[in-house]
Image (cartoon, rainbow, N blue to C red; front, side, top):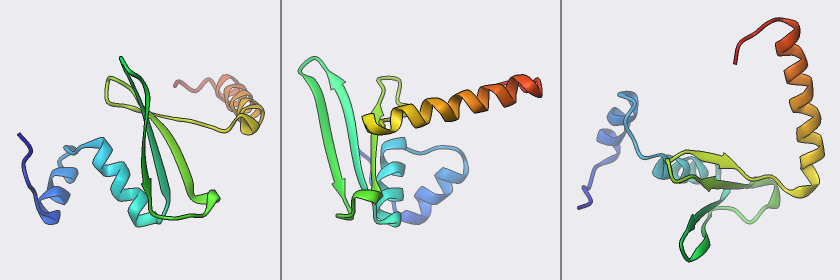
Length: 101
C-alpha cells in the first residue's frame, strides 16, 4: 500500500539515505525543467514512461531502470564514439596514477 508523505518528511528521509530513486529522478527533472524518459523491460517488452517538463532537445535525459532498481544512462548512437574516447582517456589516467575504481 502506498504511503503519503509531505515534502519536509521526504527531505528528512533523503538525508537519512532513504528514498525512492524513481521519484528522486522525476523531482530532479522537474526542478531542472528537463524531459525525463524512463525505460523498463518486462515480459511484454520495452516500456517507456515520459515525464515532460521541457520541450527543448538539449534538456532530454534517457535512462534505463534496471530490475535491481538502479539507473543506467541511454546515449544517442551519435555520441557513443565520443563516450568511448572519454572512457579510454579515463582508464589511461586511472592506470597511470594507479587509482582504484
